Amino acid sequence: MSVISISELQRRLSRFSRLSLADLPTPLLDCPRLSSVLDGPRIMVKREDQTGLAFGGNKVREFEFSVAPAVDEGYHVLLHGAASQSNQSRLTAAVAARLGLKAIMIGQKDAHAKPVNGNLLLAHLFGAEVHLVESPTEKEKLIKQLKSEGQRIYNTSSDGYYLRSLSYVDGFLELWEQFQNQSILPDAIYVCSGVHTHVGLVVGSSVLGIPLRIVGISPSPRQNAGANTQLAEVANHVVRMLGIDLTFSATDFESYGEYAGEAYGLVTPACREAVILAARTEGLLLDPVYTGKTFGALIDHIRKGQFARNQTVVFVHTGGTPALFAYGNEILVDV
Ligand SMILES: Cc1ncc(COP(=O)(O)O)c(C=O)c1O
Image: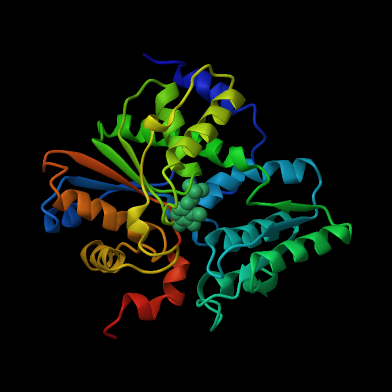
């Protein structure tokens, strides 16, 4: 039973401040040659890699909501720090440029920081002040120092955290409209997500009372069994922000950490196979850190017989493709 109607959900989402950054709606496309090569279900791709700004990706949609408070509250700086090839750092820098704010990236001095390429190159191009550090302690020290200089710094990782998930409740509405227009009822939706994209899609479908199998693939290995509990906690926060009386628990989430392999950012054989297969079968670019691993998981589930040929799976392409240029040697090992 539907908890609220589509129009009521739209009304509640419209109460949140929102920037206009993304080209929406993103396309939902068929991949018939991939379905055929895998002898699997109909495979459709929701092209969140085509959200437009700066090579796109799910962060552009997330930032429409999550960076809006930075503008409303007069922050001077957008900051982000993660791996050297972070998509979020690239898009933090691009959004700062678009909004006329300063960008600071505190990346890790990791294996993909040199030569300067991919996302890191783009962060420089967008004019970010780039610092590469050896450790989390060094990063925290630097953030403290920057804050003490009196700049109002908005950290796109932690500030607006729940708004990032809320953005994908809106994303679900867009997807659902496309399903309805194209008469599709998918048997599963696959998405690469640490937290937000997965949570937003699950909250969107649940508050509308639409039972869908939404499978989240984590880009990082899971250290403990509590990951789904954490997803449920974020979902509970998001429904409260929307004023909806619904409670999620860990069992409302289906997610897998094992497809990440040994560590975040390390290419697995299944990821390499997926990236090459999508490129050579559909001219579709996946990335080596997120969507390649997620499509690898889908291939595994198809090979294990989870889907019949008359079923439909939607793969949410969350972006990340600039990292390909920094991972060339790990993807094309024979070249
Ligand atoms: C390409 C790509 N896919 C998926 C994710 C996961 O995003 P989230 O945890 O916000 O759903 C990220 C960012 O971390 C990303 O850059």
